[in-house]
Image 1 (spheres, helix red, strand yellow):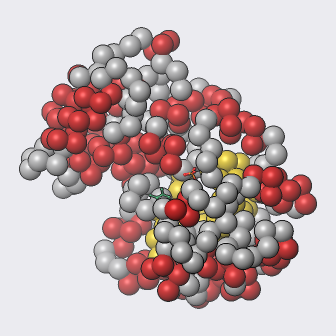
Image 2 (tube, helix red, strand yellow):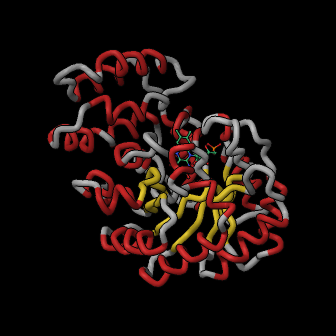
Length: 320
Ligand SMILES: Cc1cc2nc3c(=O)[nH]c(=O)nc-3n(C[C@H](O)[C@H](O)[C@H](O)COP(=O)(O)O)c2cc1C
């Protein structure tokens, strides 16, 4: 998610779940091929694995080149964005507008598959504008699967590219989970993941009875403690954090390292503002970081002070 799932956010998430697959923000082929330094667009911490790089683009040759670069940088998967509705990307034939060009997506996937041995996956919508959610989606999936894509993450709502802002396009077009379930039923050989409006581990579990995976976006960002239950509830293994304070403390060495590299405290800690959401002291934590994290020279002390404003509970009372 642009500006949200930055490398710092992802590193923080690893204090909560070791297993969930993490995705980068969308990075355009132009940024990778012509941006400098490349580290700015592709750099990550080893702790973030398993990690997928999401690409934005439509030129098969450029996408193949970027996929190869992603593999060389050690990414575990490369994902093509066919879901972003912003005007800016539509003008460059990036994102959801590609739902209207399945042959182009298929050609890109074929070229990417030939360039790498890591999985090449696609994130798409159930349709755009006046597309038929059944016939057009089926055709899109059939062509792209024929090109070698075995994994689709489907945001279970259309994007209306005319007249809705990107933000509205995440809420206004209605969710249609049954459409994604039918897709899985009709193409059982494909890995079908579902996305959109899923907010609890219970809801994830319900979805997993019908599809292969669940992608959680906004809720995981705004209420990161949700992710602390993922390893146990969905993978059957113990997760890394027994309490929010635990997770926050485990993140200290990472913050310290990033500060030494020149990162600003608030660029890192803005992703933790929801950690104590709904808990006593949660607002004070948030306020202290927001008011002090951006000041020149803000250091770990600010972080520790913010944490000290939240009473520490015993691990047994912490629930996801
Ligand atoms: C701030 C923000 C940035 C986003 N950026 C991306 C992106 O770069 N790539 C992408 O595939 N989806 C992006 N999305 C969409 C989410 O991945 C997801 O499809 C959408 O929010 C619906 O899922 P949710 O209800 O679980 O959040 C973004 C969403 C938000 C809120």
